[in-house]
Amino acid sequence: MDSNAVKSLKNKIDEIIDEIKSDIFDVADRIYENPEIGGKEFNAVNLLTDKIKKYGFEINYIEDLPTAFVAKKSGFRNGPTIAYILEYDALPELGHACGHNIIASTSFGAGIALSILSDQIKGNIVLIGTPAEENLGYKTLLIKKGVFNDIDVAMMIHPYDITTPYVSSLALQDIEFSFKGKPSHAAVAPHLGVNALDALILLFNNINALRQQLKSDVRIHGIITDGGKAPNIIPDSAKAYFFVRALNKNCLNEVVEKVINCGKAAEIATGTTLSYRSSIKLDDLVTNKILADRFAINLKGLGYNEISYEQGFIGSTDMGSVSYIIPSIHPFINIAKEKIDLHTQKFCEAAGSNYAKEMSLLAAKALAQTGIDVLTDGNLLGDIKKEFYNKNKDKDV
Image 1 (cartoon, rainbow, N blue to C red):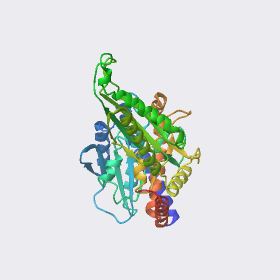
Image 2 (cartoon, rainbow, N blue to C red; image 1 turned 135 degrees about the vertical axis):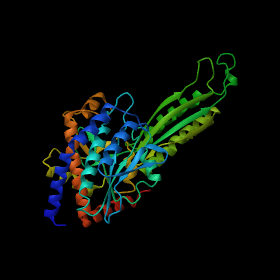
Image 3 (tube, one colour; image 1 turned 90 degrees about the vertical axis):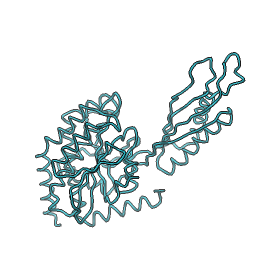
Image 4 (spheres, rainbow, N blue to C red; image 1 turned 120 degrees about the vertical axis):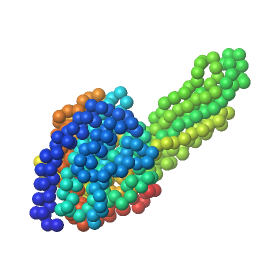
């Protein structure tokens, strides 16, 4: 497709998003006003799916994940398939202090706008509703269920206090440690007990000793979730919950093994019985630079120039696991007029502001225009996939 035709399509995208602005803002406002924690985002899903169906999409719900969905238009068109990722879960007590209402409104606007032009471009548009990013990492389950099969690229934005197309994150794994001992009276017969809390304290001390030999990008943080019932009873049960983070998936696997060995050493030293389990494992976020560059170009084309090209960083996200299987972007969009941190009351206030909604509108246009580029330029998609395969060939994917 020639450049004039592409420019015309991008202009139409802008017009469409302006026309559906009331729906985009309604999504941002109503999700913001009704925060729901991960796995329980029923109101958000009802709102989103009702609006998406209005534009001719069919909704498929995911077995065993009642707040996840995939929205497609009927029939398959030759050409690439683009997925716009929606998040809509909130934080306990803080509400939308991570701005997921803006993620939902932006991807909604981009996907709907691009789908309206589907008769003029070759390809398919999919909206994927992904719950529980904050607490359960459900994108990893959606991957296992095949939701991302046959997707060529995945795109979303994340609100922040800067705008940058390049964002990375740490790989993460949780570990729950449980030590079992033997209760006894702490004063009368302590020698008859086996102290599970002692083992737990040794676990923390062992991990602290380990830190000196770890790379600077590694993060290990944990809490005691069970430390006994009373000081005059030798604790027969003690538990701790940890997050282990590292620069990439391979490094994470090495560190997790060392942390587990810290627990095993505590088990041997105290004569307790150790069990451990993990329920969350997230890969590091690998931004596709070619796709991210095109997003930035489109932002600039919309008259927005406050773009930083330095590497942005977000703690950990299940979008990282998506980025290991398909080319992905997760750029930051500035929704604040001052420097503020995620997961704070100030950021929550920013996520509900009129400025955040205007930035959602702008980002939706840039995401949809980037979709136009992917669907109309076969060489671009080839380059995107080549970069993806080159980055991943040395990874344990």
